[in-house]
Length: 122
Image 1 (tube, helix red, strand yellow):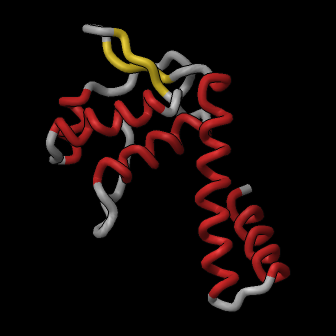
Image 2 (cartoon, rainbow, N blue to C red):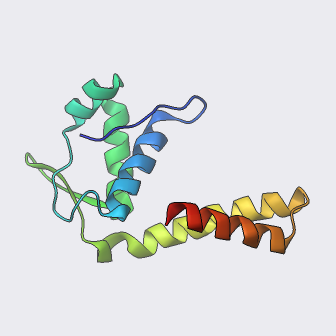
């Protein structure tokens, strides 16, 4: 299964979606790898199975996973989701950058922050 720390203030399904997305995009979960069952995830994190089902539906809508009835959910091929993930990242980044600029950060300061984060990740 996958590990995760629950954060207050963020809906559980969003936290699950973000963590599974991270695992898929990073390659930790491989194409055609089977995801844990809805019941297993619900039990592991002590959440309602409907919450996990909602997460899996969202991931499927974004093209990250596919489901086979009575078989389970699996990681989709990168070609199925990469454009969607990049568009979502751009949307989120744009909103954060706009907020930062409204709070007084300059374009140069934002660039420095991006470079710092990139170094930390790589």
